[in-house]
Amino acid sequence: QVQLQESGPGLVKPSQTLSLTCTVSGDSVSSSTYYWSWIRQPAGKALEWIGRIYSNGATNYSPSLKSRVSMSLDTSENQFFLWINSVTAADTAVYYCARVTYYFYMDVWGRGTTVTVSS
Amino acid sequence: DIQMTQSPSTLSASVGDRVTITCRASQSISTWLAWYQQKPGTAPKLLIYKASSLESGVPSRFSGSGSGTEFTLTISSLQPDDFATYHCLRYNPYSYSFGQGTKLEIK
Image 1: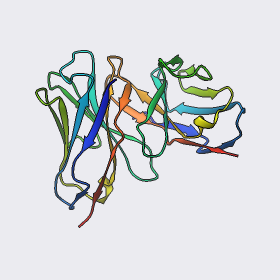
Image 2: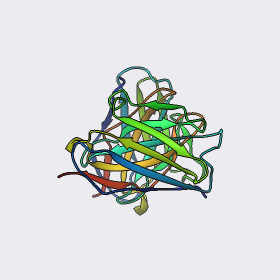
Image 3: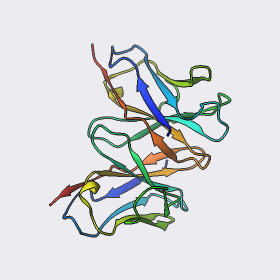
Image 4: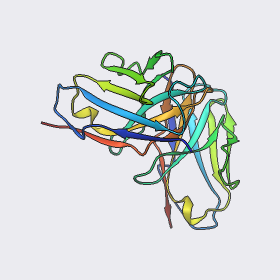
């Protein structure tokens, strides 16, 4: 059974960098069958796709966040990571990591972690 | 960017009812659409992919239909466990966009 678990600071100061980790169990981030993705949801708003990373490190980012976002993965720890720099209150949200199938839809999600941007 | 309009935002229904949720795309997306169920504090759960394909393990009372710009998720006979928020997702190899979500409440 595949499980994903998000972790990271729950509070980040404005202008600083948000960093999150997704730990995968039951599958491997080095699998050639899947991609790995980050999604977020501000309170009361729709889900928003942030980006996607493949096992070879290739990435795709949302155009609206591309200038501030980066992702990477660590195959030895079976984890992948999200960084968003220069955060503002608009980056306050529940952040989810998810596995993405070869056909590009997300099939397994983590439970999410809340990140608040505030001084 | 392709926008997804999901309706209604809230739906009140009773156990045993048949309910339908709609997602409309701002341009044709063929069948690149998925549906998810989400309960508070839990991970979104995949129900339907490719507009009408039922994910393994999902009860057959859930069904999806549509292509192009209009899509529906139907629950044929509501069960107590079905009261949750439902999201549609437009996907392709390059980008994604979600609907605003539909909260299904007990009447």
